[in-house]
Length: 176
Length: 157
Image (tube, rainbow over all chains, first blue to last red; front, top):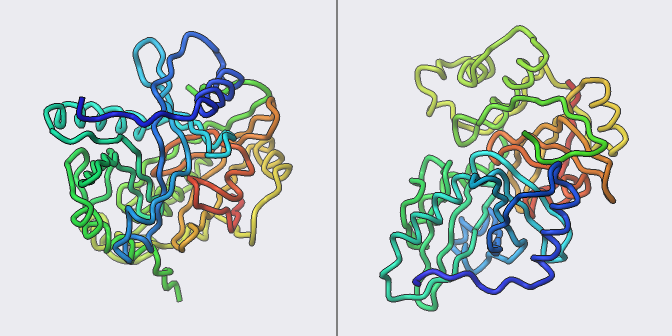
């Protein structure tokens, strides 16, 4: 297996389960995927070309499924408090990106750790496949115009593509 | 279908996905206008045309830039609304719109169309034109939205 998930802290798994089951209208039967670490970075990190170095672990995320369909995702912060339960197109986008990544890298010699990278100021969520000597970014759909969802990018190309959007994000609109 | 139940109320805002990278303001303006059945542009490019006075529907990319909410729909207040105000607005059938400022700069608009007070902390239903619908603790929206966003301005509509 060329892609693996890092071991999530057991308390993250317990916290996700507890938060979800206390909130879900129908507690069962829903399934929870294995837990993915979420890293976060900012627009300035894109401009400074230190995106992956600056990214910090901020949350643990699981996909919630029911009767075989992915219906939501839930996250706890690194303090194990509930941070969000989200629905919508990014949930399906992440599931599809993982499917394509597993297929694409099945025969790769490297052993990639699966992470999720979120850069909210530039409307970008991407799978981050991290190996000791390589990083691959796969934008999750819907992707910003400068990127193609589910394509594979090296860190430099990914950062360069996002730079105009990052610069735009940091410019306040001139409404005078 | 929202997975969240309990002492909850939702106005079920149908938030449009933003059609361009920088059109959160257009998606929010059009979605809120349609929610109230107000007259005015029905499309995001039409919204952009109304605010930029340029042919944005013919050339949307030329109008893909950050901008402000439609001042004909929204009334701005500095800072956040306390949870009780959010609750009062929702109970009165009024949406709350929040301007999110990211930690390193840059802004984004989202709507709050519901709340849930069944659990240990108040939750709000957030309709985000890019990141989609979510249910999050009120305190997370105030400071910590998507890990690095803070609620910095509020809008009644």
